Amino acid sequence: MNDCETVIDIQDMEFRWQTSGPLTLAIHRFQVSGGERLFIKGASGSGKSTLLNLLGGVMTPQRGEIRVLGQTINRLRGAERDRFRADHVGFIFQMFNLIPYLSVMENVLLPLHFSRNRYLRVTQRGTPVQEAARLLSHLDLDGEEIQQREVTALSVGQQQRVAAARALIGSPEIVIADEPTSSLDSDRREAFIKLLIHECELAGTTLLFVSHDSSLESAFDRSVALGQINGAVPTSTTGMKGV
Image (cartoon, rainbow, N blue to C red; front, side):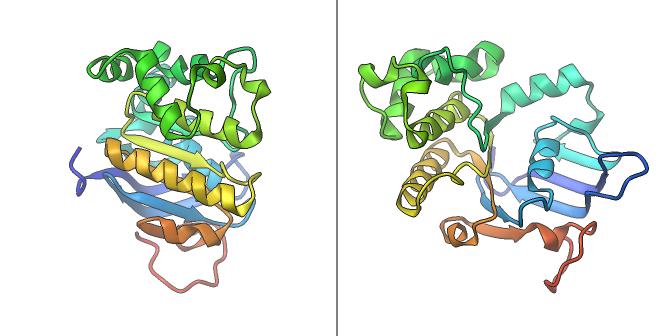
């Protein structure tokens, strides 16, 4: 994927939780370029997580188009969206969503069981276990002893890095991070973001990082306030809706 190519393109998109309810999101135009590291900021309840779920094909809008990697994902059937997400998108959830009865290594390898594309990318460079170990090592989880532990035995910061390695394995074109640093202190937040951005740069991965903490935005290529692009909520920020 060429870095200057548009990998995400939203046009005239509207989403509401209930048919007769108020709009949650109304985005006229929003674009993200390949390889970009984008920080999306907004207050709690502003629709940040909803936007990420729409971009990942977890949900679909009532109106408009969401094109990801050239595919209009809201026109795909549910199973097709699931396949697309497994092949092309790595998620880091706010609560990590690790499988508690699996080891660190098994959690990281999990996406390869659902995506042949990501599995094949990994095996071009070595074995899945070698690639998972490399990612974990780069994220400061080095050594077989820690990699074979159950994830419930890890600290919050360590679990966060396992979730990042799971999202990154198989070099998905897009990684989406939903408030993944909310439970960490400032030093651990900064260290984690540096590691995450470094791994995305190595793989040429586009990173969308959502947070209400604007102190983090200086680490990213570009910052967007959700209120600037979302016509469904009032905003005091002056500017164009299109990004």
